[in-house]
Length: 146
Image (cartoon, rainbow, N blue to C red; front, top):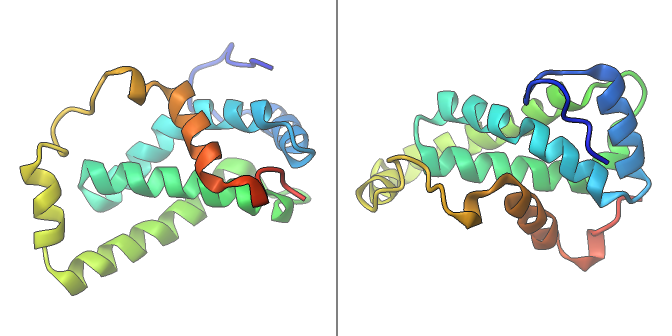
């Protein structure tokens, strides 16, 4: 199921509702399509809040993992991307709190390792592989939404 005839990141409510409905019925390909469509946009959203590439990537990945687990809670007129940004926003707040508690040293370690530079362009960073990896990391107990 590929519906990427528009620009990546554009919100299409009808497409999103259809993909969410399919994903809620266990269609991992539909959720992967949502991931592929919104990952970069969500990453930029997190990066603006965290100002750290590694933390932003982690927050975006975790937001998608949590969205997959809680997809059955998305009902009615709720829209996928705004719902996803609420999850990501909470994760960004948590990351910023953690950074302030443990000092800037935790983030500095990521910066000194080069993680803040350009994101890797290797095969492991391809959106399709990240989507599969995110879904696989959730585990078999919750691999299919209720």
